[in-house]
Length: 261
Image (cartoon, rainbow, N blue to C red; front, top):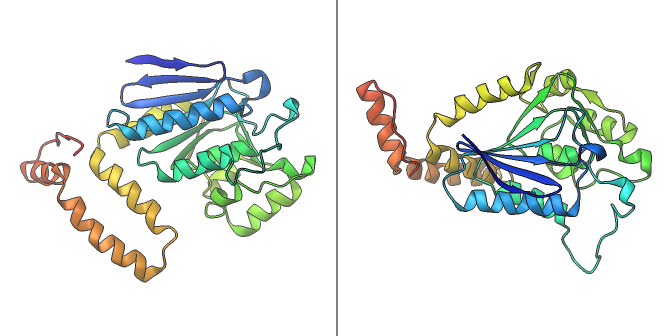
């Protein structure tokens, strides 16, 4: 069942079962990011994380040519900020994604460039069409992909990332897969995405929610700090209703009935 929650000129928001689809609606501009689209993404992530109904968020772009081309250079104000503010909107969206305990899935349906690499990089899982390309072309217009380095640095090998930043040349979907930047490449993108969602949505919502929290928290920790944190977390996992149900279902050789608690 699909329902449209909100339609803005720049962002289409649809609820498909337990999956929230967010589609950037600027196909004529290769789905470049606009302030309204950025605000819509941030608002949708906040609402999804505040409740229990949404169990996955798919982020994509309209059409088949582009996932997201990054900043809208045609507008002429892409890199003009209020420098009296210490934080900017796009960086705040990346911070927000790092706090999300609802899995974010990028559906890369075409060119993923510049700031689009940040949207893709902030997601937990990425599926791509076989014709998708990935690039950081900022040096071609006299700037550098600074903000997106914060999410790409742990996803790409250092030499690969440096070459992409310094040459501005893109890589193919097959190369992105080989480098571990994305999870899957599909000729039939939606069939592949549906299969991935199916393998995730039948699992414990509570385990996924707390598990993502744990994974993201330990990324910046030293080993001993990480061990101390995770050895306490495993005890909390075991106290959930889903953990009790999952183990009971295993013993009774039946499918678990998750409450998500």
